Structure formats: structure tokens, C-alpha cells
Image 1 (tube, rainbow, N blue to C red):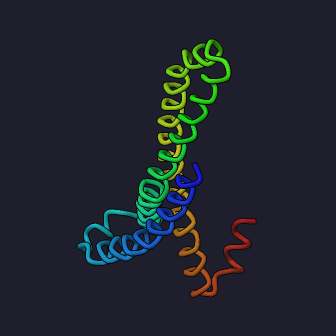
Image 2: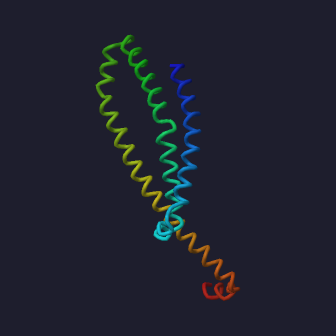
Image 3: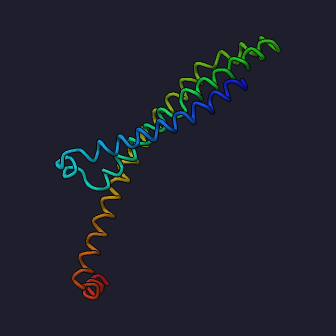
Length: 153
């Protein structure tokens, strides 16, 4: 189990370096896209696109496999320990393991769906904030603050 933990920490350091090079490649690919792509997507959506893909890279590569293998080592060790101590109770506990696995999988799928919806909402909010800031700049550029304050309030 100690070897699994050491291997996991080593893998995390390795994947952080890999993550940095992928981040550079993603930025480079976005910069070299056609201008039409940027025209079709609002500013906030481009930021959300970048954030989504960088998070996918980070969470997909960084620690899934090492954590899975570490957890598998712990689980197998604890199952063996439980069978040695009390095999009847261990078999009873193992009988509900498929139900637990299915529940955790469904929960993960639901969480991912809601995270995607949340990212879309954040991109819309970013677009609105961008439009508001642009409008404030325009009003300020033409010295219309007093007139807008009177009109709104």
C-alpha cells in the first residue's frame, strides 16, 4: 500500500508537467483558428470553452488512474483482511457492492451534466457582463454619465 501511495504521488508530478504542455497547445490551437469561429462565439463563451477543456484535461489525465489503482489496492487489502477476520460478514458486505458501484456511477453522470449546464450559464453571464462593461465605456467616452443617471433614476 505504501508503494501504491508513492507511485501515485510520482504520477501526479508527471501529469502536472504533461498538463502544462497541453495547456500551451490548446491556447496555440485557439489562437490559430479562423476569425469566423471567434465571430460566431461570444466572448464569455470562448473563456468558458477554454476553461472547460483545460478542466477536462486536468481531471481526465491528472489523477484518475493513480487514484483508481491506489483505491483498488486498498480495497483488495481490506477485503482480504475482512475475509480473514469474519468471512460471513465480509460476504454479506460484498453482496451490496454492485449496488454501491451503480449508485456512485449514476451520481457521477448527473454531476457532470449539471456542471456542463453551469458552465453554459457562466458563459451567458460573462457575455452580459461584457456587454454591460462595453456600454459603460461607451457612455463614459461620450461624457453621458449625468444624463444616464437622470434617465435611470
